Image 1 (spheres, protein in one colour):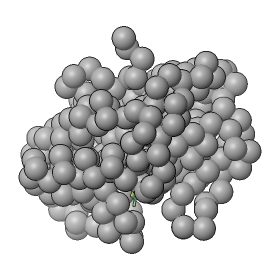
Image 2 (cartoon, rainbow, N blue to C red):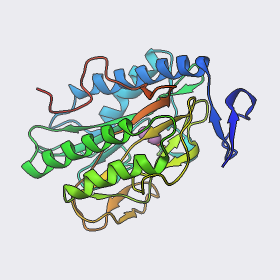
Image 3 (tube, helix red, strand yellow):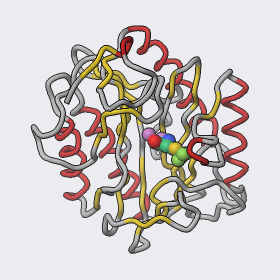
Length: 273
Ligand code: MF3
Ligand code: CO
Ligand code: CO
């Protein structure tokens, strides 16, 4: 696998791993912060009675008011700003008329494009109070993300990240979705490399300072298999079990990593209070 100085790489995914410099980290810091602020803002609107389309509209309004553009909107024909994935929806749920009900759990995933940089992040929310099993799944999934992030440092491999996530998920009787992965990003939304959320220590690609990518594990209470609904986007668990996901955008530094999408309000995890 080949690495390339990002300044010499074309603005597209050509399969090479871009190694970014200080300017990219500054751009990602600003875009990531806008993603995190959007997810902070939307939390107080999540409640029984609101539609997912209204949550999406609020996200778009917030991003545009701060000089950003929503990257998913019209991306490969995707029709909305955010992905909102309820209950057994794994990812890429399309906001619409669905009204939130007491106990629904949902992932909201936003990617503002700000001054040319993509900040990609998602969190879990609950309408009202979660069931005991939903709360447990959300807690396990958050811990999976943060263990994956902790494994991301120079000299480690993509397999180390995947292993950290898979080990924790499976030791908690949950499963890791195989069909979707984290991804390089920056000025390109979905770039090399792919970051699997399962794997073996020491395998895969060696991480180097300057790499920028997401970690975004999708964890199911039941089996890992998914299927795509007729709209061509919505991925659901085949066994109808609940699914959860959290996502951060990070950059590899000389000593570890920098998380670009940390919540300024400390709200990334839903059950801090
Ligand atoms: N934000 C999603 C991700 O984490 C991608 C959404 S692209 C869309 O990679 F087209 F599905 F919206
Ligand atoms: Co992503
Ligand atoms: Co995302």
